[in-house]
Length: 48
Image (cartoon, rainbow, N blue to C red; front, top):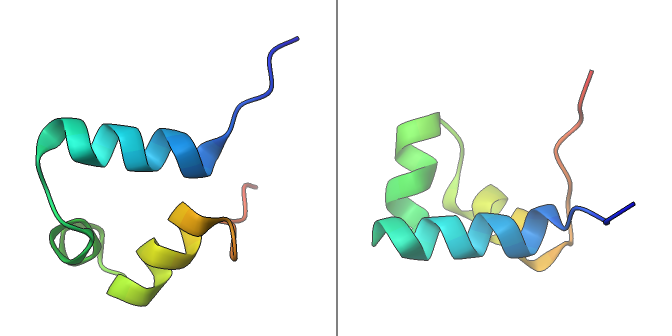
């Protein structure tokens, strides 16, 4: 089974859309720091 790398996928898709971390953060209602942490793998979203 292929491993899904959320951090790399998030960076790739954000860059494909041509938006900044700040723009993505504002769109989904989180801080820019959260987006940065997700993209670097420092912090992960919790899936329920």
